[in-house]
Amino acid sequence: MAPRNQDTKQEILRIGTDLIKRYGYNAFSYADISKVLQMKNAAVHYHFRGKEDLLAAILDQYLDDYIQMGKQLQVLRLTALQKLDQFIERYSVLVDSNCICIIGSVASDYNTLPESVKTRVTELIELVLGLVEKTLLEGKKKGEFHFTVPARTQALLIMTNLAAGVQLARISGKQDYVKIRKALLGQVKG
Amino acid sequence: MAPRNQDTKQEILRIGTDLIKRYGYNAFSYADISKVLQMKNAAVHYHFRGKEDLLAAILDQYLDDYIQMGKQLQVLRLTALQKLDQFIERYSVLVDSNCICIIGSVASDYNTLPESVKTRVTELIELVLGLVEKTLLEGKKKGEFHFTVPARTQALLIMTNLAAGVQLARISGKQDYVKIRKALLGQVKG
DNA sequence: TTCAAAACTTACTGGTTAGTAAGTTTTTCT
DNA sequence: AGAAAAACTTACTAACCAGTAAGTTTTGAA
Image 1 (cartoon, rainbow over the protein chains, first blue to last red):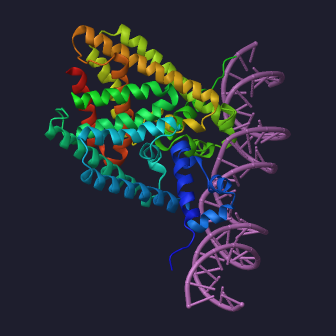
Image 2: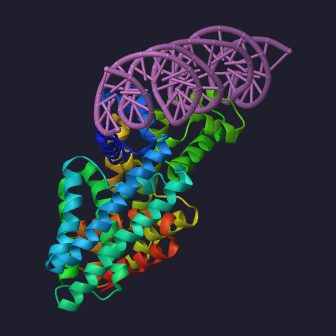
């Protein structure tokens, strides 16, 4: 009963995700994906009925991914700093691959997104913000972190520094991103 | 010799700027502009040969605007805090009009921009960063501001907080932007 | 091995895109 | 008033877009 070849579907998700992080939602087409796969655009439509469905699936993947990350953060015995580092590392990888984060990408195109996608974007942001906030609170309790604003606010500051930091890095160079990363860590490490 | 009716040209610039801040560079067309003006799309092409030229002109306008702002900041006798507030106010206006900042918008689409535009984006970012950095240094010298990182780094932090802050505000609401604004002012006011 | 579902291709649609060439109206200056 | 430049419209193109319907090949399981 289960579909047999999930490879193509996963490949479409992977390529679509890359294109969104690299060029944005409104700057890629089904043809771009099918060319990479050496298939016809109708093949992409077979797996994802429309662009809306594809983007929704991509965001669902991120939601699953971050939910999984949240569970692992509870199981793995890491310091709060290590947890925060793990999160920041995701952004450093983006800078090296000439991409921006998915949240920043869809946030910039937010007014052009279909409703089913908008709700997922909101969910994703709240999820990620929650994870960072939780880690910050944990670090504060342990004495690893020091900050005076509410944890949610500090999480907002970190997320905006990182999201816009990778956007800036594509233009003015990685050095600026590195400065931002060090500075925001300095802020919470006190 | 000078062109006589600059109204339409200015209107195109104004509408184009709004569309970019609202929907992004890849999500609007010449038809969108001409519809607002109740003209044909060829009329837009008369004033700006192509989309590339239009975007370049829009960025040139911002460059001029910020150069002007830089001069005024020297002339007007304002405290460094008032100058910073004036800069931040620009972002608060964006939040209320459901827009993101032009820099964040084009930064997200950077990989899809023609070369002539890319150079202008770089110039604009450096210009704005320079203005903020200058204001921060002045405030520090006067004892208005207190921060330990280099002024350029602090300027980067503020710019990323604001740029991504307005992006976030469209999704999770203005409250988050307000929190960010207050927190970043708290950071420099010590 | 056969047969049905899965995974495609072929071939097409209607709409939108940026852009152009040629002609018309409007404005401004003399 | 008349000429010339400016500011348009008309009418079109070629490319691309998302999406679909119908037909073909591939695959795996009974």
